[in-house]
Amino acid sequence: MVEVMVVFVVLTVAMAMFTSTMASTARQRMTKRESAIAAEAGRRMFEVMRAGIHAQTFARFNASPDDDPGGPGTAPGKDFAVAGLAPAADDPDGFVGEIVFPSAGPVLREDGEFVALGMPRDLDADGEVDDADHAGDYQLLPVMVRLRWQSRSGPRQLEMFTLLANL
Image 1 (cartoon, rainbow, N blue to C red):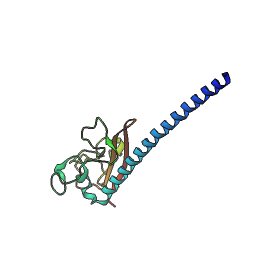
Image 2: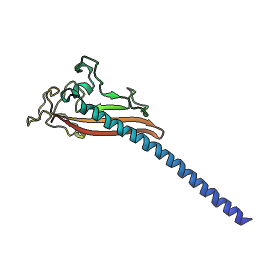
Image 3: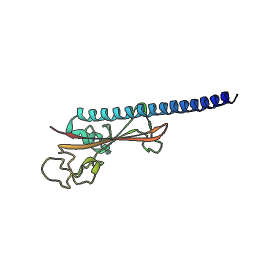
Image 4: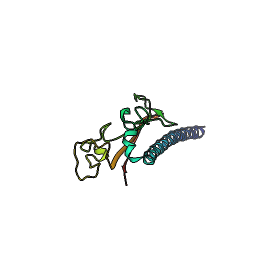
């Protein structure tokens, strides 16, 4: 009888460990799926920016609607939705994706301190870093795409960086 009880306890502990492992694997699968959706959305947004007219990229995707090429409010702007991901609970604009430039716009300056985007940097390729507005003559455009979403395991974030160049 004692041996049967010991076997029963061992099987119960083993079953609890197996169940815990399966639940953990399911959570990790969901986290990986969400991360893949976010990464693909970031890559897709970079491709959308690359596919457009380089000289209009900053104006089309910055925070200011006043400098939109087709008139105020006609460009996509800095925020974008991502299908399959819910915005973070503390996100005031309700969008998962955000495009970040070295300056919010409509002014693009070379002398800003934005280390993540490699700033300060010579954006107009004239050999000097100055404090002038280069929204109309940049050749290089550092861009960050930030994605913030609410996961089952809590808030998550992914940041992706690139340098768009007019070659």
